Image (cartoon, rainbow, N blue to C red; front, side, top):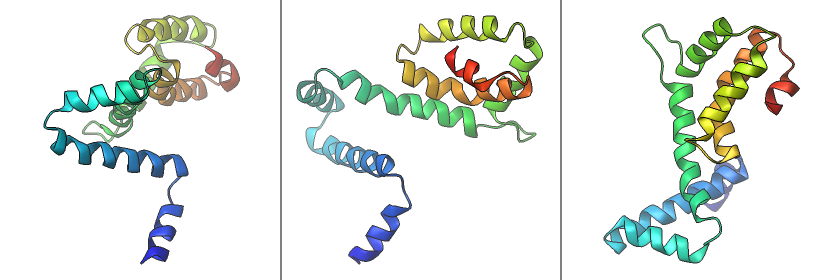
Length: 141
C-alpha cells in the first residue's frame, strides 16, 4: 500500500503534492473550528509575514485555471480568446506599450507580481508567439 502511494506521489511535482497536503489539512480543520475566520486568524498568527500570499495564491491559481479551461462553444479557451484579441490590437511595435499598460492596470487588482504572472502568462506568451515578438522581452514587460 505504501509503495503504491509513493509511486502515485512521484507523478506529481513535489510542490503540488505539498500544496495538496496543506490544502487537505486546512479543509480538515474548517469543520472543527466552526468558522473559516478562525482558520484565517490561525494562519495570520502562525506566519504573519506571508499570510496574505498563502491565502491569495490559490485564488490566483483558480483564476488561471478559469482562463485556461473555460471555453466557448467553439472550443476556444478564454486565454486563447484574449490572446487573439491582443494579437489583433497590437503589432510588434506596439506590443510593449499595450502590454505594459495592461500589466500596470492588472497590477491594481492583483498586487503580487508572481500572482499576476500566473494569471496573464498564458495569453501574454501566446500573443508574443503570434506576433513573433522575442519571448525574453515579453517576460520582461
